[in-house]
Structures are given as structure tokens and as C-alpha cells.
Amino acid sequence: MKQEPAIQVSPPCGPSDGQWLTTLWHSEWMGETMVSRGHIYHLQDLMALVAKIDEKPVGAATYRLNDAGGCELLSINAAVAGVGVGTRLLEAVEEDCRRLGCGRVWLITSNDNLEALRFYQRRGYRIIAVYPGAIDEARQTKPTIPVIGNFGIGVHDEIELEKVL
Image 1 (cartoon, helix red, strand yellow):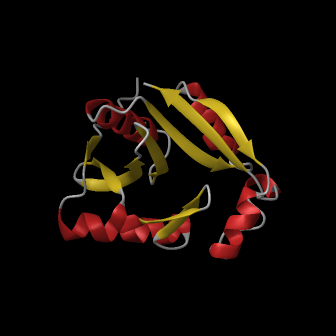
Image 2 (tube, rainbow, N blue to C red; image 1 turned 120 degrees about the horizontal axis):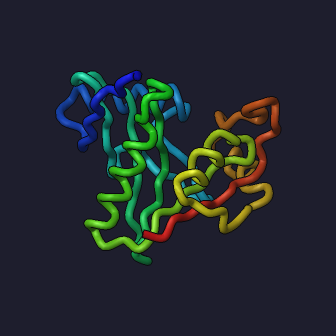
Image 3 (cartoon, one colour; image 1 turned 90 degrees about the vertical axis):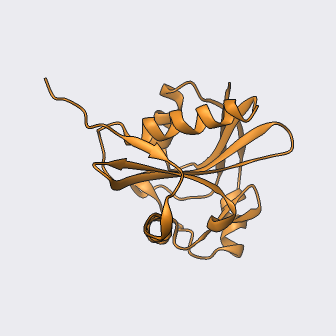
């Protein structure tokens, strides 16, 4: 039986984690900004967690708290697939949100992100809203957002999911 590696998750520690996180965002999100529901978020303004295996960064999550007692998950990236990095990061974000008194975690994904829809729904998240054309509008602010996404699907709409904690 295959043994899963030990995944440690903590806030970024020192300049090397910060640099790794910046490189990750440039590679995965085309820069240090993200547009969600018409708002622009900057990486340096977000809470972050870094996942490591044997002291090597293998994934990260970024999130923010809002005034309504919720937590918006802005990104999860696993540089190593199939070993539980994404799941462990999501659990750590949820743990932190509970500790901080948040009643729910919510996120936005794009209509082409079928793997994310599967991932989150399998972990108790529910689709609560669809925003047709929201990504078309966001592309005016951030032109690097692709027009064609996963599986050759046109990227146009935002899908909101949430999990009540």
C-alpha cells in the first residue's frame, strides 16, 4: 500500500516562501492580482498558507476575511498532484476560518474549471450562484484572463460555491 507523504501547512515563513508564492501566482494567475466578483485583490494583501513536503513548497492557498463573518478562498494551487496537497490546504483554510469565527467559506471559480467544481463539491461545497458574463467583464480589468480555458471551453461566467462551517 502506498504511503502518502507528510504535508505540513503553515503561513509563509521568510523571504524564500514569499518568493515561491509570488512565482506561483505569476505562473498560475498571470501576475500578483486576481479579480473576483469585480474586485481586484493583490497577493500581498491576502492571508496565505504554504504546503510543504520535506521542507519543499508544494502548494499554497490564499484567502481573505470579510465583514459579514465569511472567508473568501481566492486560490488553491497544488504543485504536486494526487497526494492530498489541495485537500490539506483546504482543510487548513477551513480550520483557520473556524478559529477566527467565520461561519462560512466561499469561493469563485470559472465555468471551464470542471476539476475545481468536482474537487470542492466532493468536500461539501455547494453551488449557490452563477454570474453570467462576469469573467468577460473582469477581462477588461485584467486582459491576461484567457478567453479559452480547460477542455477548450470558452471562459465567460463565475460560479460561486460555499461551505457552511
